[in-house]
Amino acid sequence: MIIPGYLDGYEPPFLRSPLVDGSDMMSHTLFWPAFLFTVGGSASAPDAFNVDPADLEQIVDTFLDPSSWPVFSLPLPGHCRLHVIMRNFEDDGGVDYVLDPGTGDAAVPLAAMEGHFRGPAFAWPEVVAAAHQPDQVHTPAERLLLLVPACADSNRPRKAVDLVAEALTALGARSDVRQVSEELLNSRRYWTPCRWANVDDVLVSLGSHAYRRHGGELSPEQLRLITDTLQPSGTTEHR
Image (cartoon, rainbow, N blue to C red; front, side, top):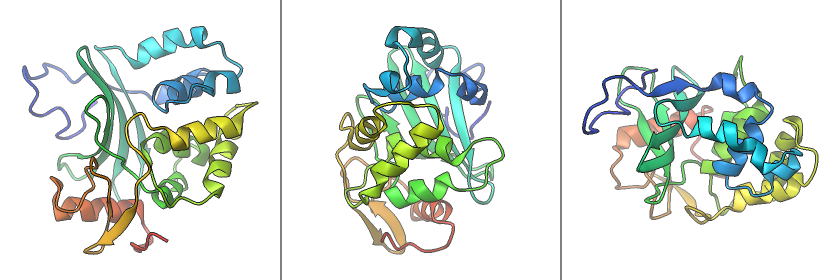
């Protein structure tokens, strides 16, 4: 699997791409408790799915395989795709969220969940809008839960907890769904909830660690692409 520009600049260069399509993994009964526990930071996720955390070891090992990095991809408007990448360097592991423009140009970084974290990637309205984009493979519940770990928004509505809880139930969680929802939305492993604002007609994060900052390393054209892709109606109004 190739994501344009994603592996550029690493030394030594890769002889072959370690990226592999992880979509088949998502049908595994242990996928969601494992993903929400490891990526989402929800300690209650295994119990919510009635799973012993020890039973997750095999699928977590697959998540963390240094020779094959699972990639979970979502189609977005136009030719864009959102990729969630398990970056499995032995000494530099993490989870990357990137936007592939689908034009052959390099993917745009949105978040890096690691010790030297960057993010968040999304405001809450963007997660909801992206979750309900047409997708022949993934349900809105699956799309929502893939995106929530990279979202932080201090202005999200109270109903966000209910929407995440409904998605959890749709994917097989049977207890403590509101607790898991709260853990996913309020995790502070990497960033705290931040505000978002419209600057020069693009939505940017006011958090100090975000790629999506005004005046940061992303170009105005990249910031515009992200805004237009995640808010397909064409509006940049946050509320």
